[in-house]
Image (cartoon, rainbow, N blue to C red; front, top):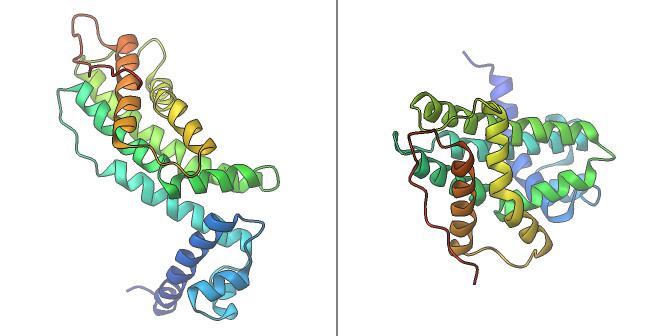
Amino acid sequence: MPNPRSVARQDKSLPVLKAAASVFLAHGFSAATTDMIQRAAKVSKATVYACFPTKEALFAAVIERECAAMAETLRTLETAPGDVSRTLTELGLAYLRIVLSPTGLALFRVVVAEAPRFPELARRFYLAGPKVIARMIAERLEVAAQADEIDVQAVGLEAAASLFVSLLRGEGQLECLTHPDAYPSAEQLDRWVRRAVTTFLAAFAANGHPARTPPTEEMP
């Protein structure tokens, strides 16, 4: 049976985590205070410290919770077997909707800003977020490789997944980070993904098994 004390702590920690995420992403780690989090969570300061002894521990928990939620979106994504172009397109759209969402961008900004002072927190973000997602994409690529749809032997699955992620986020993430008041349209997301898929398959489509690549759209 679950420990009643542990269950009670989890029940109390959830509103604290939700409030902390809102405060950290809005104000950054350094400017956020436990008083702000306590007020947002509508709990006592004693409850905050009972769940998370330090602000760093609370921020680490927020990072892991947000990364887990993002990764779960890709984990549960169902893709069509036997059509690597469609699989990569669906994965790409799901990925960009995560990293270019207001939450995804805010979390990235906060972590990068605090990385010099708190390198361990930045590393936890990297391992819980980008590395987990890259691993899941590598698993999808492995299925396509086993079906002889792609050939990534020259670089390996992990490197191929990393290259695909880089193709996806390169232009879009930089544009969104430097234009915080503008969110990309569905057409922009689609264009970035199509270009990434076309470029990736041009490099890795298996010989004798040309992949059906989505048409590349022209920039307006």
